[in-house]
Length: 86
Image (tube, rainbow, N blue to C red; front, top):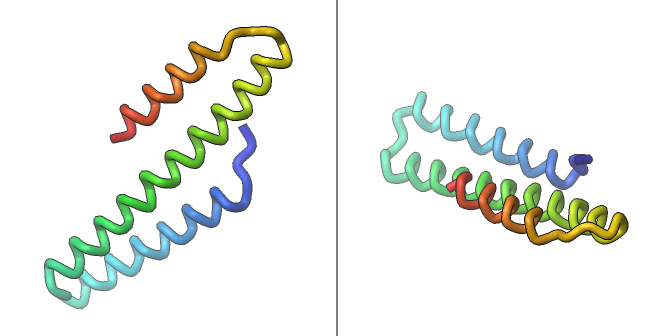
């Protein structure tokens, strides 16, 4: 699978969020603020997982259609990946 710049940029933003959280902790910021930022980071990671799995699924289904194969198993595998990621 080819990971495009959009996917990589998402991870770079998440990396920045995590560094910001570490800085907040070092500055002894309020627990509620730290947890809020951690939650936002988790949401961003979940969305990135969704983008990667869906992009991969599109590619796999396209390849299956071109080769005359059934895509049902690929869809099940993608759904299982999403379930396991939670």
